Length: 125
Image (cartoon, rainbow, N blue to C red; front, side, top):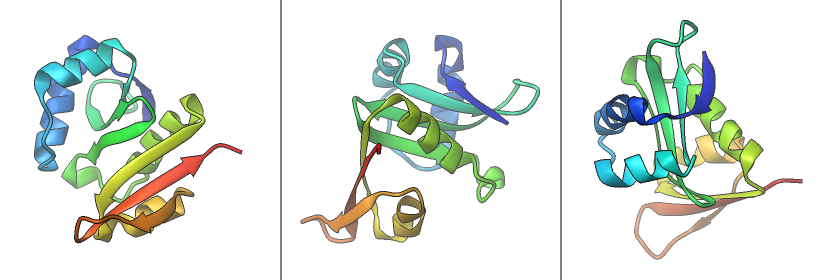
């Protein structure tokens, strides 16, 4: 598995991964973010299959998703680390059940005003 910037040709696979994770994503927005180098994909060792995707809006993680059968294999972590390599700061808003994932990645976590949602902030050293 490797992580790289998504290409326009990856957009259908990115949308498929995001849809499979039940994350709302607009295809036109994803296409624009790909053009701005703000979408990363984790691909299989042979480079043929998109296993996960991360969509940024500047320094904010809009979405990160991994194919259901590939979860728990470090793919989401690899995607966030790839984004962190390219940004001095990352933020994310997420459901409380994802707190351990973001804490493990070094995010400082705080509650939001929205019930069940948290805010994470990670800065490079």
